[in-house]
Length: 364
Image (cartoon, rainbow, N blue to C red; front, side, top):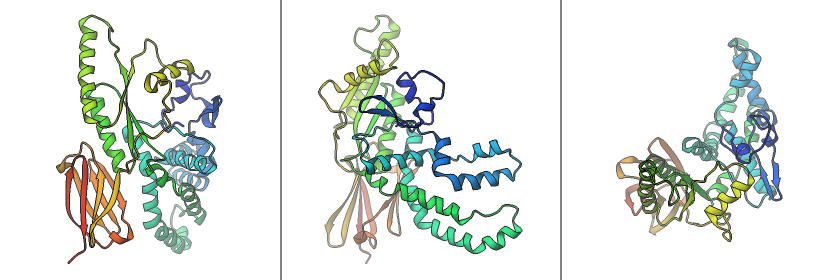
Protein backbone atom coordinates (compact mmCIF):
# COMPACT_ATOMS: atom_id res chain seq x y z
CA UNK A 1 0.00 0.00 0.00
CA UNK A 2 1.41 3.36 -1.02
CA UNK A 3 0.90 6.32 1.32
CA UNK A 4 3.25 8.51 -0.71
CA UNK A 5 1.32 11.34 -2.43
CA UNK A 6 3.56 10.85 -5.49
CA UNK A 7 2.06 7.35 -5.88
CA UNK A 8 4.78 5.62 -7.90
CA UNK A 9 3.93 2.11 -6.72
CA UNK A 10 2.17 1.28 -9.98
CA UNK A 11 5.18 2.60 -11.90
CA UNK A 12 7.50 0.33 -9.89
CA UNK A 13 5.51 -2.69 -11.01
CA UNK A 14 5.60 -1.46 -14.62
CA UNK A 15 1.85 -1.04 -15.01
CA UNK A 16 0.96 0.17 -18.49
CA UNK A 17 -1.63 2.82 -19.27
CA UNK A 18 -2.33 6.31 -18.00
CA UNK A 19 -0.01 8.50 -15.95
CA UNK A 20 -2.36 8.16 -12.97
CA UNK A 21 -3.14 4.49 -12.55
CA UNK A 22 -6.85 4.34 -11.76
CA UNK A 23 -6.69 0.57 -11.42
CA UNK A 24 -4.61 0.80 -8.23
CA UNK A 25 -7.16 2.91 -6.35
CA UNK A 26 -8.55 -0.44 -5.19
CA UNK A 27 -6.37 -3.47 -4.29
CA UNK A 28 -5.03 -4.85 -7.59
CA UNK A 29 -3.76 -8.43 -7.77
CA UNK A 30 -0.32 -8.64 -9.39
CA UNK A 31 0.30 -12.33 -8.71
CA UNK A 32 -1.20 -14.89 -6.29
CA UNK A 33 -0.94 -13.55 -2.72
CA UNK A 34 0.28 -10.11 -3.84
CA UNK A 35 -1.99 -7.05 -4.18
CA UNK A 36 -0.94 -3.42 -4.61
CA UNK A 37 -3.01 -0.40 -3.56
CA UNK A 38 -2.52 3.37 -3.89
CA UNK A 39 -4.90 5.48 -1.79
CA UNK A 40 -6.92 7.73 -4.11
CA UNK A 41 -7.96 10.68 -1.97
CA UNK A 42 -10.70 11.78 -4.39
CA UNK A 43 -12.45 8.43 -3.95
CA UNK A 44 -11.82 8.37 -0.20
CA UNK A 45 -13.39 11.82 0.27
CA UNK A 46 -16.62 10.55 -1.31
CA UNK A 47 -16.45 7.29 0.63
CA UNK A 48 -15.61 8.48 4.17
CA UNK A 49 -15.34 12.27 4.35
CA UNK A 50 -18.74 13.30 2.93
CA UNK A 51 -20.03 15.68 5.61
CA UNK A 52 -16.61 17.20 6.34
CA UNK A 53 -15.78 17.85 2.68
CA UNK A 54 -19.28 19.14 1.96
CA UNK A 55 -19.08 21.75 4.71
CA UNK A 56 -15.57 22.93 3.80
CA UNK A 57 -16.62 23.17 0.14
CA UNK A 58 -19.67 25.28 1.05
CA UNK A 59 -17.50 27.67 3.09
CA UNK A 60 -14.98 28.04 0.26
CA UNK A 61 -17.76 28.77 -2.23
CA UNK A 62 -18.79 31.81 -0.18
CA UNK A 63 -15.37 33.32 -1.01
CA UNK A 64 -16.20 33.28 -4.71
CA UNK A 65 -14.43 30.07 -5.70
CA UNK A 66 -16.08 27.89 -8.30
CA UNK A 67 -17.46 24.50 -7.35
CA UNK A 68 -14.51 22.59 -8.82
CA UNK A 69 -11.90 24.81 -7.16
CA UNK A 70 -13.71 24.60 -3.82
CA UNK A 71 -13.83 20.79 -4.01
CA UNK A 72 -10.11 20.62 -4.74
CA UNK A 73 -9.21 22.93 -1.82
CA UNK A 74 -11.51 20.98 0.50
CA UNK A 75 -8.91 18.18 0.52
CA UNK A 76 -6.72 19.30 3.40
CA UNK A 77 -3.44 17.83 4.72
CA UNK A 78 -3.91 14.63 6.70
CA UNK A 79 -6.92 13.26 4.84
CA UNK A 80 -4.83 10.86 2.77
CA UNK A 81 -2.83 9.62 5.77
CA UNK A 82 -5.96 9.03 7.88
CA UNK A 83 -7.61 7.17 4.99
CA UNK A 84 -4.57 4.88 4.66
CA UNK A 85 -4.56 4.18 8.41
CA UNK A 86 -8.25 3.28 8.27
CA UNK A 87 -7.45 0.64 5.65
CA UNK A 88 -4.59 -0.72 7.74
CA UNK A 89 -6.96 -1.05 10.69
CA UNK A 90 -9.71 -2.56 8.54
CA UNK A 91 -7.46 -5.15 6.89
CA UNK A 92 -5.98 -6.07 10.27
CA UNK A 93 -9.40 -6.64 11.84
CA UNK A 94 -10.57 -8.66 8.84
CA UNK A 95 -7.27 -10.61 8.66
CA UNK A 96 -7.45 -10.02 4.93
CA UNK A 97 -3.68 -10.08 4.43
CA UNK A 98 -0.81 -11.88 6.15
CA UNK A 99 1.48 -8.86 5.72
CA UNK A 100 0.82 -5.21 4.89
CA UNK A 101 3.80 -3.26 3.53
CA UNK A 102 3.41 0.51 3.66
CA UNK A 103 5.40 2.38 1.03
CA UNK A 104 5.93 5.67 2.85
CA UNK A 105 6.92 9.09 1.61
CA UNK A 106 10.19 10.83 2.60
CA UNK A 107 10.81 11.55 6.26
CA UNK A 108 8.61 14.62 6.89
CA UNK A 109 5.48 13.11 5.31
CA UNK A 110 6.10 9.75 7.01
CA UNK A 111 6.32 11.37 10.42
CA UNK A 112 3.03 13.15 9.82
CA UNK A 113 1.54 9.80 8.81
CA UNK A 114 2.56 7.92 11.97
CA UNK A 115 1.68 10.85 14.25
CA UNK A 116 -1.91 11.02 12.98
CA UNK A 117 -3.46 8.50 15.43
CA UNK A 118 -2.04 10.29 18.50
CA UNK A 119 -2.86 13.73 17.12
CA UNK A 120 -6.46 12.76 16.39
CA UNK A 121 -6.77 11.01 19.76
CA UNK A 122 -5.60 14.19 21.52
CA UNK A 123 -8.10 16.28 19.56
CA UNK A 124 -10.97 13.88 20.29
CA UNK A 125 -10.22 13.85 24.03
CA UNK A 126 -9.42 17.52 24.63
CA UNK A 127 -11.15 19.58 21.92
CA UNK A 128 -13.88 17.63 20.13
CA UNK A 129 -16.46 17.31 22.98
CA UNK A 130 -16.20 20.99 23.93
CA UNK A 131 -16.28 22.12 20.30
CA UNK A 132 -19.29 19.98 19.44
CA UNK A 133 -21.28 21.14 22.47
CA UNK A 134 -20.34 24.78 21.90
CA UNK A 135 -21.43 24.72 18.27
CA UNK A 136 -24.67 22.99 19.22
CA UNK A 137 -25.46 25.80 21.68
CA UNK A 138 -24.58 28.79 19.49
CA UNK A 139 -25.56 27.40 16.07
CA UNK A 140 -29.22 28.63 16.07
CA UNK A 141 -28.17 32.22 16.80
CA UNK A 142 -24.91 32.28 14.86
CA UNK A 143 -26.50 30.98 11.66
CA UNK A 144 -28.92 33.95 11.67
CA UNK A 145 -26.23 36.62 11.77
CA UNK A 146 -23.12 34.99 10.27
CA UNK A 147 -22.50 35.05 6.50
CA UNK A 148 -21.16 31.49 6.84
CA UNK A 149 -23.23 28.81 8.54
CA UNK A 150 -21.63 26.80 11.32
CA UNK A 151 -21.20 23.08 10.59
CA UNK A 152 -24.20 20.90 11.40
CA UNK A 153 -23.99 18.15 13.99
CA UNK A 154 -23.65 15.57 11.19
CA UNK A 155 -20.24 17.15 10.46
CA UNK A 156 -19.09 16.20 13.94
CA UNK A 157 -20.75 12.82 13.56
CA UNK A 158 -18.62 12.21 10.46
CA UNK A 159 -15.44 13.06 12.42
CA UNK A 160 -16.49 10.73 15.24
CA UNK A 161 -17.11 7.91 12.76
CA UNK A 162 -13.64 8.42 11.25
CA UNK A 163 -12.08 8.31 14.70
CA UNK A 164 -13.86 5.06 15.54
CA UNK A 165 -12.51 3.51 12.35
CA UNK A 166 -8.99 4.35 13.57
CA UNK A 167 -9.40 3.09 17.13
CA UNK A 168 -6.64 0.66 18.05
CA UNK A 169 -4.36 1.42 15.10
CA UNK A 170 -1.86 3.26 17.32
CA UNK A 171 -1.37 0.10 19.41
CA UNK A 172 -0.80 -1.84 16.20
CA UNK A 173 1.87 0.60 15.00
CA UNK A 174 3.67 0.64 18.35
CA UNK A 175 3.70 -3.14 18.90
CA UNK A 176 7.14 -4.35 17.69
CA UNK A 177 5.83 -7.92 17.42
CA UNK A 178 3.32 -6.68 14.83
CA UNK A 179 4.86 -3.63 13.15
CA UNK A 180 8.45 -2.79 12.28
CA UNK A 181 10.10 0.02 10.34
CA UNK A 182 12.62 -0.64 7.57
CA UNK A 183 14.63 2.46 6.67
CA UNK A 184 15.93 2.69 3.09
CA UNK A 185 18.89 4.96 2.49
CA UNK A 186 21.69 5.64 0.01
CA UNK A 187 25.44 5.58 0.74
CA UNK A 188 25.69 9.38 0.72
CA UNK A 189 26.48 11.66 3.65
CA UNK A 190 23.39 13.86 3.42
CA UNK A 191 21.00 10.94 2.92
CA UNK A 192 22.57 9.07 5.84
CA UNK A 193 22.01 12.09 8.10
CA UNK A 194 18.33 12.20 7.13
CA UNK A 195 18.09 8.48 7.90
CA UNK A 196 19.55 9.09 11.35
CA UNK A 197 16.92 11.77 11.98
CA UNK A 198 14.20 9.41 10.72
CA UNK A 199 15.44 6.76 13.18
CA UNK A 200 15.10 9.24 16.06
CA UNK A 201 11.67 10.45 14.95
CA UNK A 202 10.23 6.95 14.51
CA UNK A 203 11.60 5.93 17.92
CA UNK A 204 10.13 9.07 19.48
CA UNK A 205 6.72 8.08 18.08
CA UNK A 206 6.92 4.63 19.62
CA UNK A 207 7.86 2.61 16.54
CA UNK A 208 10.67 0.06 16.33
CA UNK A 209 13.23 0.24 13.53
CA UNK A 210 14.58 -3.26 12.91
CA UNK A 211 16.42 -3.07 9.58
CA UNK A 212 18.49 -0.67 7.47
CA UNK A 213 18.65 -1.12 3.69
CA UNK A 214 21.32 0.76 1.74
CA UNK A 215 20.30 1.07 -1.90
CA UNK A 216 22.30 1.80 -5.07
CA UNK A 217 25.69 0.63 -3.78
CA UNK A 218 28.30 0.54 -6.54
CA UNK A 219 29.50 -3.06 -6.89
CA UNK A 220 33.23 -3.89 -6.94
CA UNK A 221 34.90 -3.42 -10.30
CA UNK A 222 32.52 -0.72 -11.55
CA UNK A 223 34.58 1.60 -13.72
CA UNK A 224 38.30 2.18 -13.46
CA UNK A 225 38.43 5.91 -14.17
CA UNK A 226 38.78 8.61 -11.53
CA UNK A 227 35.10 9.59 -11.68
CA UNK A 228 33.73 6.19 -10.62
CA UNK A 229 36.69 5.52 -8.33
CA UNK A 230 35.86 8.70 -6.41
CA UNK A 231 32.22 7.75 -6.05
CA UNK A 232 33.05 4.23 -4.90
CA UNK A 233 35.55 5.51 -2.34
CA UNK A 234 32.98 7.98 -1.01
CA UNK A 235 30.31 5.26 -0.78
CA UNK A 236 32.62 2.87 1.07
CA UNK A 237 33.44 5.56 3.62
CA UNK A 238 29.75 6.31 4.25
CA UNK A 239 28.91 2.59 4.40
CA UNK A 240 31.43 2.24 7.21
CA UNK A 241 29.76 5.09 9.09
CA UNK A 242 26.31 3.54 8.58
CA UNK A 243 27.49 0.19 9.97
CA UNK A 244 28.87 1.97 13.04
CA UNK A 245 25.98 4.34 13.66
CA UNK A 246 23.18 1.79 13.40
CA UNK A 247 24.69 -1.04 15.44
CA UNK A 248 23.39 -3.56 16.41
CA UNK A 249 20.89 -3.41 13.51
CA UNK A 250 21.66 -5.39 10.40
CA UNK A 251 22.64 -3.19 7.45
CA UNK A 252 21.77 -4.70 4.08
CA UNK A 253 23.40 -3.55 0.86
CA UNK A 254 21.55 -3.56 -2.45
CA UNK A 255 23.76 -2.97 -5.48
CA UNK A 256 23.28 -0.40 -8.20
CA UNK A 257 21.82 -2.49 -11.01
CA UNK A 258 22.70 -2.09 -14.67
CA UNK A 259 19.11 -1.12 -15.46
CA UNK A 260 16.19 0.62 -13.80
CA UNK A 261 14.34 -1.59 -11.29
CA UNK A 262 10.87 -1.63 -12.84
CA UNK A 263 8.58 -4.62 -13.25
CA UNK A 264 8.08 -7.88 -11.38
CA UNK A 265 11.19 -9.66 -12.66
CA UNK A 266 13.58 -6.87 -11.63
CA UNK A 267 11.80 -6.38 -8.31
CA UNK A 268 12.35 -10.08 -7.61
CA UNK A 269 16.07 -9.58 -8.28
CA UNK A 270 16.16 -6.64 -5.87
CA UNK A 271 14.35 -8.67 -3.19
CA UNK A 272 16.84 -11.51 -3.58
CA UNK A 273 19.76 -9.07 -3.30
CA UNK A 274 18.34 -7.66 -0.06
CA UNK A 275 17.06 -10.81 1.66
CA UNK A 276 18.52 -13.76 -0.20
CA UNK A 277 16.53 -16.87 -1.07
CA UNK A 278 15.78 -18.41 2.33
CA UNK A 279 15.13 -15.41 4.64
CA UNK A 280 11.53 -14.40 5.37
CA UNK A 281 11.39 -10.57 5.10
CA UNK A 282 8.09 -10.42 7.00
CA UNK A 283 9.61 -11.60 10.29
CA UNK A 284 10.33 -8.96 12.93
CA UNK A 285 14.06 -8.69 13.55
CA UNK A 286 13.88 -6.61 16.72
CA UNK A 287 11.09 -6.66 19.30
CA UNK A 288 12.38 -4.15 21.83
CA UNK A 289 9.86 -1.36 22.41
CA UNK A 290 11.02 2.20 21.79
CA UNK A 291 9.91 3.26 25.27
CA UNK A 292 9.14 1.45 28.54
CA UNK A 293 8.04 2.24 32.10
CA UNK A 294 10.06 0.76 34.98
CA UNK A 295 9.50 0.91 38.74
CA UNK A 296 12.76 1.58 40.60
CA UNK A 297 11.51 2.07 44.15
CA UNK A 298 8.62 3.20 46.32
CA UNK A 299 6.74 5.83 44.26
CA UNK A 300 9.74 6.06 41.90
CA UNK A 301 9.62 5.23 38.20
CA UNK A 302 11.77 5.63 35.12
CA UNK A 303 10.53 6.26 31.59
CA UNK A 304 13.10 4.83 29.18
CA UNK A 305 13.00 6.10 25.57
CA UNK A 306 15.17 4.89 22.72
CA UNK A 307 16.73 8.10 21.36
CA UNK A 308 19.74 7.15 19.19
CA UNK A 309 21.87 10.00 17.83
CA UNK A 310 20.13 12.58 20.07
CA UNK A 311 22.27 15.10 21.96
CA UNK A 312 21.52 16.61 25.37
CA UNK A 313 20.92 20.15 24.11
CA UNK A 314 18.47 18.97 21.44
CA UNK A 315 15.89 17.51 23.82
CA UNK A 316 13.08 19.33 25.61
CA UNK A 317 11.00 17.66 28.32
CA UNK A 318 8.04 18.52 30.53
CA UNK A 319 4.99 16.89 32.12
CA UNK A 320 1.45 18.05 31.41
CA UNK A 321 -1.40 16.42 33.34
CA UNK A 322 -1.29 12.70 32.50
CA UNK A 323 1.31 13.01 29.72
CA UNK A 324 5.07 13.27 29.44
CA UNK A 325 5.91 15.64 26.58
CA UNK A 326 9.22 15.13 24.75
CA UNK A 327 10.51 17.56 22.14
CA UNK A 328 13.39 16.99 19.74
CA UNK A 329 14.08 19.15 16.72
CA UNK A 330 10.75 20.34 15.38
CA UNK A 331 8.78 17.35 16.72
CA UNK A 332 6.82 16.94 19.93
CA UNK A 333 5.54 13.63 21.29
CA UNK A 334 2.90 13.22 24.03
CA UNK A 335 3.47 9.97 25.93
CA UNK A 336 0.49 8.87 28.00
CA UNK A 337 1.51 7.82 31.51
CA UNK A 338 0.04 4.84 33.39
CA UNK A 339 -2.40 5.69 36.20
CA UNK A 340 0.24 4.91 38.85
CA UNK A 341 2.57 7.58 37.41
CA UNK A 342 0.14 10.45 36.75
CA UNK A 343 0.70 12.07 40.15
CA UNK A 344 4.50 11.87 39.95
CA UNK A 345 6.87 14.73 39.09
CA UNK A 346 9.90 14.51 36.76
CA UNK A 347 13.07 14.90 38.84
CA UNK A 348 15.99 14.05 36.58
CA UNK A 349 16.69 13.12 32.97
CA UNK A 350 19.85 11.84 31.33
CA UNK A 351 21.08 10.29 28.11
CA UNK A 352 22.72 6.91 28.50
CA UNK A 353 23.83 4.54 25.70
CA UNK A 354 21.29 5.92 23.21
CA UNK A 355 18.42 6.04 25.71
CA UNK A 356 16.73 8.98 27.42
CA UNK A 357 16.02 8.07 31.06
CA UNK A 358 13.43 10.24 32.81
CA UNK A 359 13.05 9.71 36.55
CA UNK A 360 9.69 10.52 38.15
CA UNK A 361 9.04 10.65 41.89
CA UNK A 362 6.27 11.65 44.27
CA UNK A 363 6.25 15.30 45.30
CA UNK A 364 7.34 16.04 48.85
